[in-house]
Length: 344
Image (cartoon, rainbow, N blue to C red):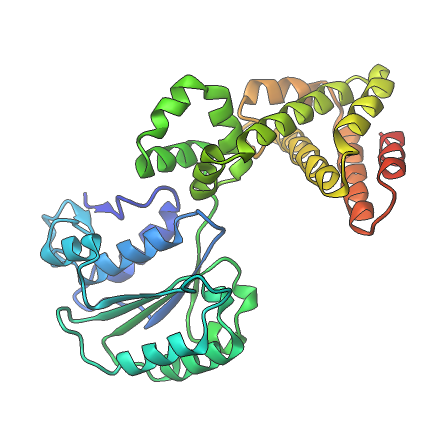
């Protein structure tokens, strides 16, 4: 059986849906897609692989092992960045994709492809396009040449004009599971295997903190934030352990005020981590196989969840969310924390 988008990790349903539209003599695809997803979830990788699949010389070959095959001339040229008919547009270091870049696309789109039957445009950070740029692109999306295929990569399609979205279906990249996040990280950078072996606890901390983004996990692991992440997660684990014992309410208050009073932003970040962990405990109480966003140790999460009633977990969750809202409204941090703990 032909392997579908072998370089895409996770998002199997999305890949299967796209493949169904590609595996015919005349691919049943719209002339443009918006690929939406958080930073580091594989939007550009999908765009490149979709471009390859669209022009793969073995696309309809039943004996080809994969789609895209990765071996034909078209696939190899795209992989090497040597295909003149695949054009990428971005911010070029600016805050947004400006109208001049889109006007250049509009001029170029009317030049027939050099090498392929298609001309493929990838617009990175499309959510940053100015209104003028989006309006300029709209003219091309309304009446594109038959050979043109445009992929708009964005983190938040809500920032794009409705007229753009009405002409380009949105396909969404889902966050990766922790297992897929790790696999994507090691695929992108095999040297990270050494970091995994030398500090597995830090490696797990970063994966869970990245919340399904392999790109973010790689950035965090190689940056200065790794130590802060570990500190935040250890503080969260202690919070849940103390919260599980109603006799330790005083110790819980001391712990929370110790880790949350350095500044308001730090307090909101730490409370958000508490909230994510409690969410895991609520979910795992309802379904032992529920996907977790904080705990990498499912057995530990089950143990903590079993030690608290669902009602208590929901009370803690509500109090945490209320405290975060209060801090966003510039309420006094210490008083907010004391009030929060009193509700547990």
